[in-house]
Length: 158
Image 1 (cartoon, rainbow, N blue to C red):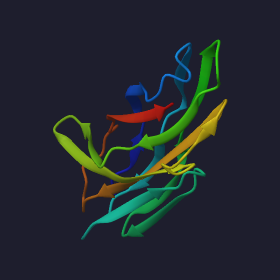
Image 2 (spheres, rainbow, N blue to C red):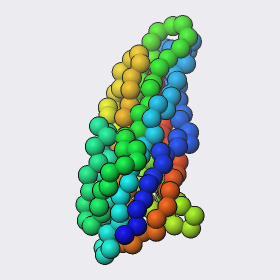
Image 3 (cartoon, one colour):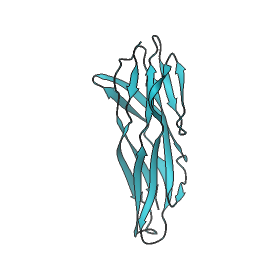
């Protein structure tokens, strides 16, 4: 039985796009305060399985994946703030990736079905916390290792 421990995923890039001149003197800031991490698990011996990390940091599984204790188990967290003078910004949407590849040496797993809380609709003004979860796809007899990867999110504001 192979045992896995996934380190926290690193954030590659956060983009803030100005959509309006309202808050021209304001700057939107995005800070990654916690990485996405699936903890320890063992892969299925046949077939495939998934580990689903909710935005609340709760992991569930499908297929023959065995969830093990230990390691860090969290959804990702981002703080959206603003600085400068002028009218408060309204964060309008957040765009998440479709899928990314996590690698450990020559081995890989796919991370997809990204979700956020609040969802990718109007986020509001002032300081906002955005939580992100996703689904890790695990192959039968997946090679053990410390798999990692990066992803981008885009936050629009006006």
